[in-house]
Image 1 (cartoon, helix red, strand yellow):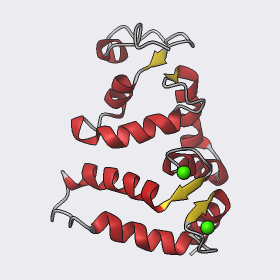
Image 2 (cartoon, helix red, strand yellow):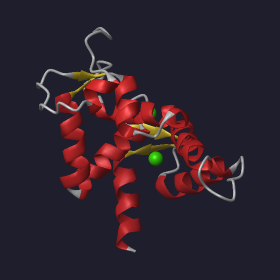
Image 3 (cartoon, helix red, strand yellow):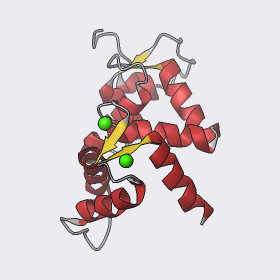
Length: 159
Ligand SMILES: [Ca+2]
Ligand SMILES: [Ca+2]
């Protein structure tokens, strides 16, 4: 795995828009550029990058990217929830811990905090996580499994 030979920012947005070959690797910086949340959202971009990088080799291949996008755009609810679970499960051990959820939530708040008014309170992410976690962790063992995640999300969308 090397950082060389990656698409440059100019490459991504270049005027010559040939469709890229399938072995193109998109690096973290390019991913950040594509997501266009700019500097302040690099943490969130990082989490998103990991969610797209399904084989965890540190690079998002064009195929990974397309796969991720097509799940987000056209996937079933189940597929989307699986994808979201994967995003929250930072260390990919199959469980979402409160810390993992807090990391994601902080990143999202960080990103939104810069452009929302009134400015969000410092402890808002933690309160948010507490509420979510209590609802999702059905058996109260301190972690959220994929089943618990899907069950809670579907319940919310049914209401
Ligand atoms: Ca985990
Ligand atoms: Ca649980």
